[in-house]
Length: 131
Image (cartoon, rainbow, N blue to C red; front, side):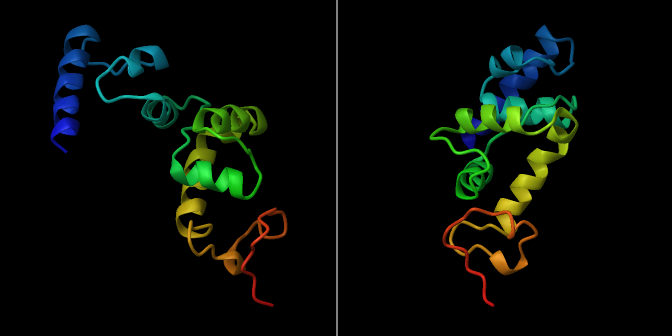
């Protein structure tokens, strides 16, 4: 948490000095800030600036591979596949919907397939559906 606090403090200084107090709107500038990687930059671009990008966290990465929505070995590869697959008008909400689905329904250890709204479309082999 000390490193995170230092990064927030330094980032605030950089934004105040170099960007006149405005958060930069491009990925390259965002990623140049301390502690900001591609995922964080995408969250900012998506949530604040409503850009059609998707931030792939552990939930989205696992979910995309598990249900074969976008199978890949890296978060970047999953991000690129999802960006091509999901129409731009849905990319803003897709990030949040996929995270929530992966966090609360399609959980890592005990997926709740019985209460899954996409169970009929899901390609997860080990579905735990009770008939």
